[in-house]
Length: 287
Image 1 (tube, rainbow, N blue to C red):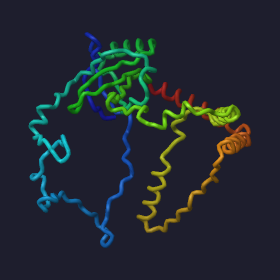
Image 2 (spheres, rainbow, N blue to C red):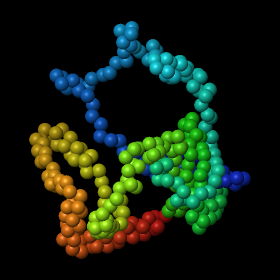
Image 3 (tube, one colour):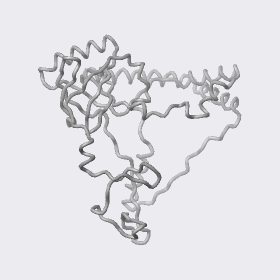
Image 4 (cartoon, rainbow, N blue to C red):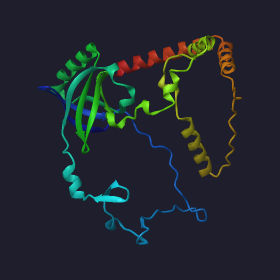
């Protein structure tokens, strides 16, 4: 695995040399190019000034910030460089918090942190165990790629995992959504709630990540592969379930459907639980 960053964690006067790795592989989404219908060649977009009626090159273009309608301040590359922060090699821990205090909406990217060499291994292990026992998450700041990032660092399978967090100004509050205010005011029927609880219980199980895959991407790639070989593509329309307009009817049918499956959900839960335990054992053995 390729190292993406090297530096150290700073906890007050303690410094721990660490290396950072990407925890997630960002898979590119399936992308299509625009082709000319007549010759099937890829079209090219041009940068065009409608005022001067002229196609522009990169040398003709400046960077501008729109501070009012159709009014711009021109910012040069040199001015932008002077405004940027210099990169630093430190992740500075500013506070320890309870994990439950960080709402999931703040989480962004994730990276592994491991000790860099034998010198930092002892200090790394000490804080790993101390944070694990206290069930604490470290809030930290670091500068990377000319931007200051807020991190949540927590113990994870023998390493520390650093989650990049959104800043508060990047989060849109749910209070700005008018419909969200109505949910708490809706009166629900007791029998409807009973059936809803039953449906939730019948559909419950363990989260096994390995059970899920991007079926749409796989189908599109299979289609692309077949067409590239000149094969005819036959796409069968997906059968849609009949829509049930009445909520109570929908609940009754859903509950009955899960009941008809008998012990299938429980067996699936038991199998899923076994798979989870097997995955955890493998991870511990690999750690």
